[in-house]
Length: 103
Image (cartoon, rainbow, N blue to C red; front, top):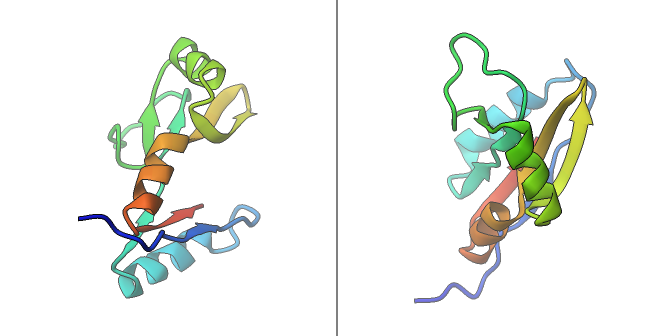
C-alpha cells in the first residue's frame, strides 16, 4: 500500500541554549507522526551516550566517503568534527508520510 501524502520536513535552527530541545520534546508529545533525524558524527562518544540514540557515531574515513557519495542532505565540520544528516533516511521517512524535524 503506497502513501500518496508526503511527510513534512521541519528545520529548527537557533543559538545554543535557545530552547530547541524543549520545543522538539513538546512537538514530539503532540505530533505522533513526527520523527527527529539522528545526525552522523565523527566526534568521540561521551560517557552515557549510546550509538544511534542522539548520534550515529562513525569514523572520519567513513564520514568522508559518505560526503563523496552525496549521502548527506547537509553536513558541517564543527570544532574539527563532522556532523551530517542522512539523505536516504530523511527521504524514506518523508516518502512514507512521516514528518521529520532537523534540530
